[in-house]
Image (cartoon, rainbow, N blue to C red):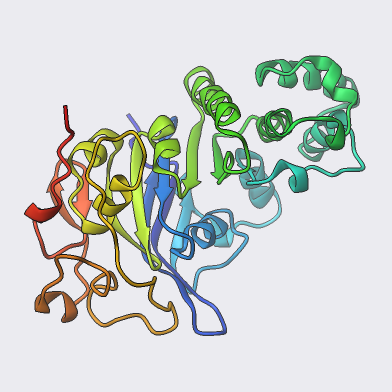
Length: 318
């Protein structure tokens, strides 16, 4: 049985010309049919990480592997196949769908780009719309004639058109109302189950990630500071930053942990642990070295000198 990850980031880093260390030594894996959530505040490096995974940016260090191949070395047919098998659902369908094209034309363009004949395109588009819960009559509509939820379903249908192995969703429901968010998230869960598609779901909303993810990676200032199965993260978080994020999520029944101060500058990060300037349980040891991710339980890693800060226990309440 092949246990090799479908998508793997090996120590990827990216620094921009203005000295911003956007991503710093990130390791991630996604297996076939799995859903990985990546969470963190704005500016933590989530979107840059996604661009590196999609080869929209080239890492300064490290490698991104897809199906065992370094994507930076893919050329021509290999790169086209990678684009077919890895699709993206952007944050705002109002801007990601061409306003001059009907839904049919937007979906058919993706099908044509990957070699599907005209007759097959005409037959496939209604099937794709039905798959995402849209009536085929929407094929003839333009984006301005549809609601936000309908547009996002169309964007998901476009991503599914090439029969991908993995779909990367960058804040894919943040622009939608809560009731519509739930519908789209349920749709993604159904697609993952029925089509065995892997998802990478980027969000600042932990409740959204909890709904969809098998595993969750928490980022802070360009690094992954905790990674665990979703259930374990919710009931047994080991990093103070994760605890604070969980406490700010409505409905989880936890005491609010208020972080003081602002996110440090990515051009001049603090020495040692970058979170120590906001951490309520920081000690002198935290200023000396950046703690590496270490195993705290099976499949659960955290980058903190504290094994389990007692002041920040996040055991689920009754």
